Image (cartoon, rainbow over all chains, first blue to last red; front, side, top):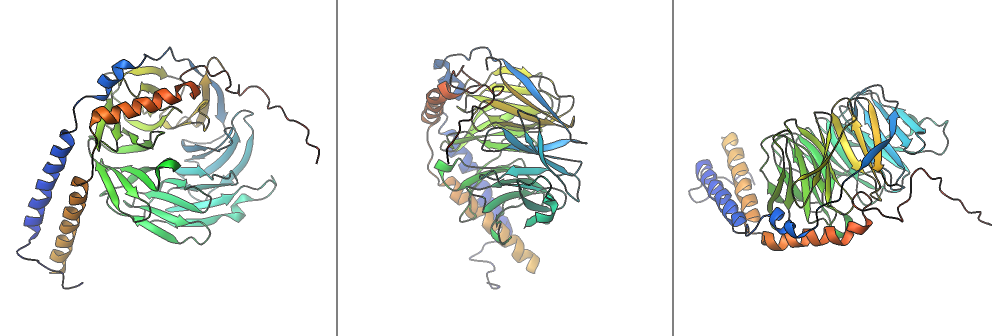
Length: 357
Length: 70
């Protein structure tokens, strides 16, 4: 291994030339597929009816910026985490705070609900991701049952359970993503390839198999094979940090939100960007995206305190939601598609749903 | 000397990675777009934020609980 030096006239310079020509070839291959644009194909589909989404609940309780939230599979509970170091589990309809944990660190940037609904995971500036089982006993001290699972060498920016409560996937400021066994805390697989902080990750919908997407400060979005650790595909079209990535419900595409004020849509089988969601009037960075149940709508939260709702297929803006008094840090559609939760630097979370309900 | 080895190893990894990416099978956008549209259309009726779904639960309403005889 130590003797794997120069092979047949290879130098760093010649390898660099080879990667340059491969990069050009990759671009050419991708261009060959552009026989038509997505929004042109979408001319056939009906225009969306007027969207009326109203905020019905405002969740107050955090003492500082809310950085992350995640829905429980039961469609009414959610977990949120904040710069104040607290993680709160809420019943979104009754506004009841069911659990609260105070972490020793501030900036809890990531939180996730376990598929069983019996635990939550969170992490941030402590460089760790910890799992807390949710007790039915309200008097029980949740902190006592904390289990440290992931250990990174920089902040944890995102975390998600995989198909069960047994494994979690994390993304970190250290430039890597990692898969961990919750019970033992063992590192099962690590994912190297990003050349800067990884800010977000999303697991492919279960039908599509074992892959996930990550996005980061190197402006790249990468698709990974969870078993082999291999980077399968890579997309670099954003002009600034990618703050959030989210799969389209069919698993064949994903969207990204970036500091360059655009959101983009990439098809995995065409292996390229197929739409850019932007407007001259939208000049602030986008921090978060999520799809509606059918994938027709893309909700995107921005640093100008608004949520733009994009028609994914036609590429136009369907609606704009106001209400937050500071940056929107996270938007998530509930598991049955009925509600939208938005978390903000204004210390609140808002739950909204369609006006006819 | 080892720094140069590291650079070569890195450069070689990049070349291998790019080779993998260049050689994957791709689909024409017309076909990929048609499939994305088909998915939207197939699921539009169940999407409460896109169409009024009568069966969607009104989150205001209390869930009806039935007595279960154990």
